[in-house]
Image (cartoon, rainbow, N blue to C red; front, side, top):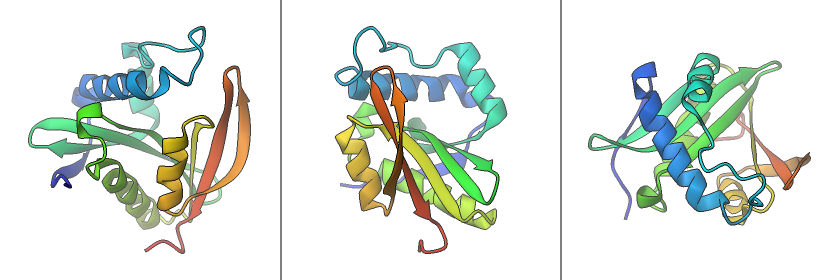
Length: 161
């Protein structure tokens, strides 16, 4: 089954809903792979989400009036877009929400003239790496973290359809 929702740019009024989706999804997905001494039950506080809304553009996937998933986009130098904070609420996972959000961000980046999309994900998040690989991303590097490392993945948007 696939959901048939809508994606829209989010505003500051949506910050708490975004924070709720990210925190719920993070709690479910990463609690088992990030050691307890490094895991934050609330990955984003109110002040942190406020700063993020100033630095990047958030998009949300709405199912009826409920925020099912979120993702953020920033532009970097040299035509590179960075995808951040891609999270789907646990009750809406595996229904096409994540794919729809990623495709939407790719389209927005392409319209802005950006040629490459970059993202980071935890090296132990096999489901995440597999998800992005299915969407055409490839591993291009690794960044050490106290609990392991983050995997850098990229996709050439000029080849995306």
